[in-house]
Image (cartoon, rainbow, N blue to C red; front, side, top):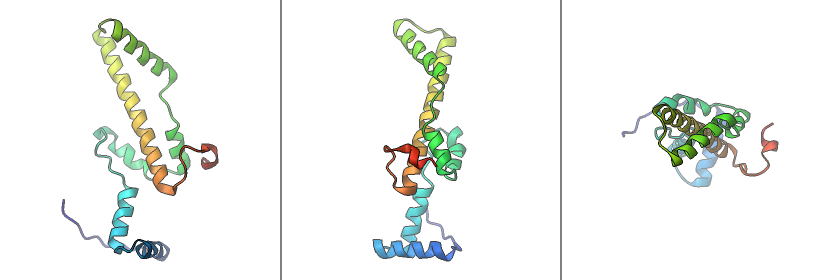
Amino acid sequence: MSDQTVTLHLPEPILRRAQRATDVLQCPLEDVLTATLAAALPNIEDAPPEMWAELARMTWLSDQALWIIAHSTMPTERQEQMQALVEAQSQRSLTPEEQETLEALRREYGRVTLRKSHAYALLSMRGGRPLLGDVQSYER
C-alpha cells in the first residue's frame, strides 16, 4: 500500500492538541495524525462485507448510542431457539430447515456480538474510561 499526500485544514485548537502530542511523544506531526486517524477509523475489513457500512457509521455515533449497542442482546426467544436447535443437533441430525434456521441464528448472534465488540472498542478509544466499571455514570 502506498502513502498518499493529503492536505488538511485543521481548526487551531485541534492543531494545538496535535502539536502538544508531538511534544509529549517526541514524534512528527504526521505520525500523530496518522495514529489518530487509525484509531478513529478502526479496521473493519475482517468483518463480513455486508457489515462494513454499519460498522463504519458507528464511528460517528454518540457515546450514549454506542453504550446502547454495547449492551444489546439477541432477543431471548431467538437465543432459546438457537440453544434448542444446538441441543437437538447433539442428539440427532437436524432437518435441512432446522439446519438453515440454526445457521441464520448463528449469523445473527455473530452480528450482534461483532456490533457489541466494535462499540466497546470505539468507547475505549474515545476516552480511556473503564469499560467494566459503573456503566450507568457513562451513559448520560
